[in-house]
Image (cartoon, rainbow, N blue to C red; front, side, top):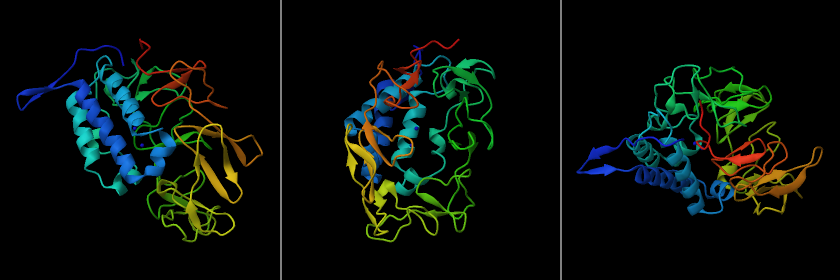
Length: 307
């Protein structure tokens, strides 16, 4: 779960204007509030606290609304905020696609034109590499398209084993290491189907997903490799050991990444780099969302003119 100066488009209604600041505050509050309500464990893993989550989500929204020729408006972001706030936790956490109100709007830039955000493009998709701030407008990738140098759009994910875009499988869908399941689902090898991850502490689990599903990390659980039961997953701060410690997997908090040496099962949590700080897309540190690691430094989308 989710930028240069531009004249603001405002929504007139009920005798007042909806500002960019208010719309982005509402959207950030909706996203982070749903995450806190539906998966406190995920919130802890991604952010130091709710306030940081809201500040960074608002920053991403504000910069996107300032993009040249964007079709996004304060009104469209407010509609997305309302849609997110009305979602059930099941939909918020497991849906393969965001609400319609949160899909990119279609801008005016033609295929091949430079862009930073999808709402600048007539197609509703800006192809941007993970290590770049600017890309080009183009068609939304189809399943099986390469994602080696671009994203996959809002309804697909990039499968690292094949570097292709794929639609995450729904419950009971056929799956494999190259055909992943959606959030909250595990690909069980014995049936090659997507099955719900175990969301109850003490319930039986299979950490290798050979004959049954693993535990649901969104519920704050991990599978004890000895008892084969779901237990509360330890979440530790940057600098602490992570990975498989004893018989349970320990995760990192506040956006830190567990850096595990090749051939090992245990590593160390590395804190995300600050905006402008040094980063490394292979070994870490990574950048704090929405910043990207570009030429070894964390940079915010919208800070570079794409032309």
